[in-house]
Image (cartoon, rainbow, N blue to C red):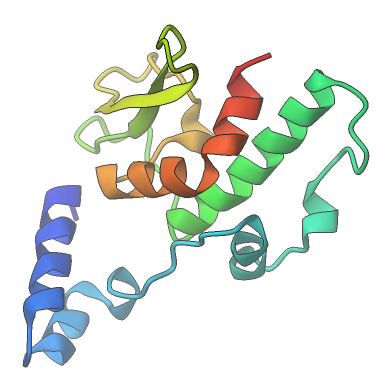
Length: 154
């Protein structure tokens, strides 16, 4: 099912006074559940792991170790935001959306825009940090921007 159809189904679900049960039957109830975490701990709980299992450097000694920890947190939060679903890189019709950040901004690090990959060889955040929908990207950036910044900026 493509992202646009899912987006429209979610919009109808939010507006519906009746028919929510039918939408859940047609599209699956997981599409309408709010699985998107707002904290790393919520993501870990959703994924069935503990933060201690995930973070490789309990006491980071330098920027590299902080970046690796941020990447580990982003893997877990991205997995939870995508409801544990994996992108299909053999499916060129499926959009793979990732955030793009502008490091040249006078204000410093900041979210710039989203885009999708139309060629399999092209990506910025990496497949683990790509998403199905722009809504998922925006959620990740809104709640986990600090980790994106730690991972990208030295």
